[in-house]
Structure formats: structure tokens, C-alpha cells
Amino acid sequence: MVAADSEGPNAPGVRQGDLGLRVHWCVLPFRVLLVLTSHRGIQMYESDGSVMVYWHALDSGDASPIQAVFARGIAASGHYICVGTWSGRVLVFDIPAKGPNIVLSEELAGHQTPVTDIATEPAQGQDCVVDMVTADDSGLLCVWRSGPEFKLLTRIPGFGVPCPSVQLWQGIIAAGYGNGQVRLYEATTGTLHAQINAHARAICALDLAPEMGKLLSAAEDTFVHIWKLSRSPESGYIEATPLL
Image 1 (spheres, one colour):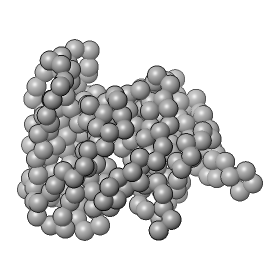
Image 2: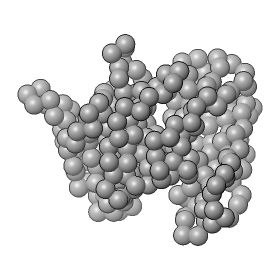
Image 3: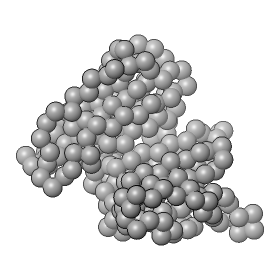
């Protein structure tokens, strides 16, 4: 059992579920860490949850007294763990092979509104260009290449609708939006390949079965849909075929 520090008031107009506790298993090349976020900070535990190896307190900085302070969006990329924040910055932690000597190595400044989600996929050899995408409350997507210094490759503009969930699969970005749409983009160029009116209400989460190329979407309309992702051999365009 892991005790999480989630006590504290909500900001006006913000639901606790929007910025409260998030939990994610981060599978690194040499260890697995359990990462929890709350409005107070970021906690990292050994895989069995028995020992907390790192604590990072969130600094409210220039936030106004009524502005919510929180961390949201967790993903592992190589030997780094990335966590999004209310300020739009993404914190990059360098994780050692063992022990508690975790270091905040970089802060990525690609967003102007709170980060909602982060997705990564393992680098596909030396030619891999894109291996991380971040999303925010405005619907903006930032596409990154990880490494000793993370590089922002491109921004995919939002359209005033939050993007609560994003996934990355074989160079394809699948983004779920607050208007119920799922959009598929080419990660390297930001080209929109498909726009699907998948749900009647806001999408809550996307998930992937990477070996099968299947995408799952869940929304506030209480429905779950499954899509088969593929790339047309003729046009090279990304297609999504509904399965459920």
C-alpha cells in the first residue's frame, strides 16, 4: 500500500479529478518505478511500493492564490521520467540504474497552458526522430525527441478544445479531445490524417495495444470504442477502422 498526499482545497471551478492523484508505472531500461502526482508534489516509489525513493515538491512560483497547482501527465522515455505541470512546463527527471540519486535535469517549455497528458514510445533505432508528445488544455500538441537535451521538433496547433489524452504509435499521434473527436496526426510533420467524431461527449482517455495497432477511446458519454490503426500502402495516409 502506498500513501499519497492528496489533501488540500480545490481551485474554484476545478474538479478534484481534473488535477488530483495520478498514478503510472514507469518502465525504464533497468528498473520500474511507481510514480504518483498530486497538487503538492511528485512521489516516486520502487516497483513494489515499499520505498519512496524520490519526492519533488511543486513550487507555486508566480501562480496566483486562486490558481490550482498540480502535476499531470507521466511517461518514461529511455532513462528519463517526464511529468507535466499546471504551468505548462514538463519536468524531466534523470533516473539512475538504482538508488535514490534522481535529478531534475531539464524543464521543457513548450506549453502556455496546463499539461494534460504525455505519451512516449521506444526509439526505433538510430533513425528515430520522434519519441514523445505532450498535450495541454488548449489542445496544443508538442512533439519532442528525447535525449541528454530534449528537442522540440514541432507544435500541432490546438483549436480551443482541451486534449485530455494522447498516444504515440509508430510515428502516429492519436489525440482525444474535449469535443469527442479523435484526431490522427503524422508525428514528424504534424499533418492531420484523420478526424473522427468518435464520441458525443468529452474523451476521458485513450489507450493502445501497440502490438496489434488497436486504439481504445473512452468518454463521458459512457461508451468505449476500439479502432484498428493502419497506414494505407497506396497513399501512406493513416486510417482508423472501427471495431467496437
